[in-house]
Every structure is written in C-alpha cells, then in structure tokens.
Image 1: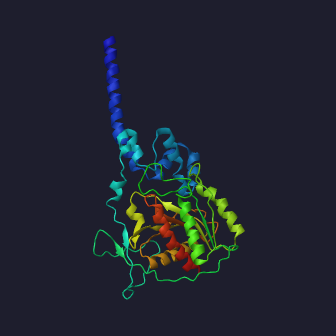
Image 2: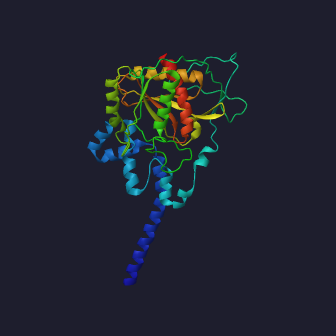
Image 3: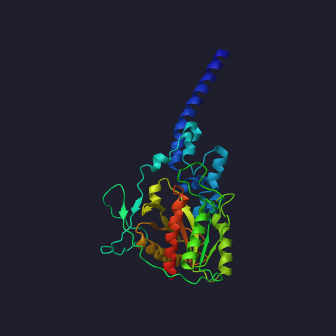
Length: 357
C-alpha cells in the first residue's frame, strides 16, 4: 500500500514538472506577443473589476502603460519595457547576451547629404500626417535625400522678461541608450537625460536667435511614470499665468523603439536623431495645436527632408487643452545617443526661429 502511494506521488511530481516545462516555453511567447499592447492588461483587470474599468477609461493613454509594468516588475521580476526580461526569467543565460548588435548592425539610417548645387533643388511639399519617403540613390541600403538649409534667420534682441518659448518634460528622466543596456533608459542625471537636450535647445535659441526661453526641469515621472501628465499639469499652468508672452510651449520627450534606423538620420556624415510631433485629439485646442505642429513639421522637412517622422494624432489630451500653443515633441529614441539628439536640437531651434520671425 505504501509503495502504491509512493508511485502516485511520483507520477504527480512528474506531471507537475511536465506542466512547468510546458509553461516555461509557452508563457513567454504569449506574454511577448502582448508586450506592447496596454489594452491586454487593461482588459484583464477591467473584466474582474468594474471600478477599475471606469478608472482606466479616464486615464491618459500615455499613463495607462505604467501601472501594470510596475506591479509585474516587483512581483515576478518581469519588466514590460524590456522584452528580454521574460526570457531571462526562464533562461538566465540570456541576460548575459547583448542583443543590441543584432538589432542595430543591419540598420541603415536615412542618409542626408549636403547639397551645394541648388539648380535642381525643388521645394518639398510635406504631407500633414506622414513625412515623404526620401529618394534612393547609389546604394539601395542607404536612403539619400538632399537638404535645403539655406535660410538665414536674423537674431532678435532678447527680452528675458518676455520669454517666447517654454520647454518642460512630462517624462523628465527619459535618457538615451544606444547600447541598449538594461536599466539605462531612465536617469535623474540632468546631463544624461532629455533635460540636457532641452538645455541645449534653450541655449541655441537664446544665443543664436535672441529668443528668450524658460526651461523647467521639474521631475514629473518619479517614483513612477503613472499620472505623469497629471503631475506636469500644474507646472504648465503656473508658467502660462506668469508669462502671457509665450508663443510656443514644448513638452520635450524621447521615443522608445527596437530599431535605431527608425529614429536616426545622417547629415553631413554626422548621425542625428529623427523627431516626431504628437498631438492630442481629445481637447478643445486640437485643431490649433495640430496646425502649429504642421507648420513646424513643414519648416523642418523643407530644410531636411525626412528628418521628421511626421505628426501622430492620439486620442488623449497630453495637457494640450491648457493652451493652443502647445506641442509634444519626441527627439530620437532610447536607441539614439545623447549627442545625436543634441545635434537635432539645433535644427529644431532654427525651425522655431523661422516660425517666430
């Protein structure tokens, strides 16, 4: 009888081991498939709790993603923003593999070359939603376009009491990480994160074009990114009251991607981060803010075709209901370097100077 019980227990153990092995293989695939779908997590919670369904429906799209990732990371050691963590959880050896080279070595960024011959240069008619595809020449693996950066902008007499531009950051700790190193995508070091890009944009606008800038460096995304827009809202409101002279308000971010080619261009043999405008359609100022983004997008792409990734419309507010002078600007991604983003900030500065002249 005792032997019989032992056989049953052993069989149960074998079955459990088999189930565990199957789950180890299947579960990462299922989770990875839904990695970038915030609706997957939202719907799961909403089905079990009607109150949570109401709460999620009233949160900005940009903030929804940060709630579940935080819980999963601390409970099961899985970081939704880092796909490799799913597999590291099952196969620890993967944690020692640097996949960035597998991703970036075959990436061919858009190549923008200088053009001193303006005879055959035609003015680009930029679409409102998507940037035009560049023409391909010589090497099919590298896209080549010709810039038309011939605009000279007269420097204004700066008036610091009446700033024209406000720069702030809803996600202040976003940093640049071309080597795709784990846990390096965010930092509070202002010399390494998006704040540095904002500071360089301010310096270029003031020193080269005489445009006074207010740059707010308040951290709005700690201890979590959750409700970042709610936290940055009072910051924007206070400056709107203090400086009625403001003409452009920029929420400066960097994007996140798995391919550096999507967010990189080469201008005169130097790598630059591509930029992208995001407009919230869920607010009363949508039309005016879209027009503002469209004008800046056109100016940039007329100087450097395809530098901009275009204008993305989202069903959210992004605090753009506070003013009809607001734009959300993404400069590069987590796979760009800080230097690449700073180089692009100089082009952004010039486009703003042209817009305000």
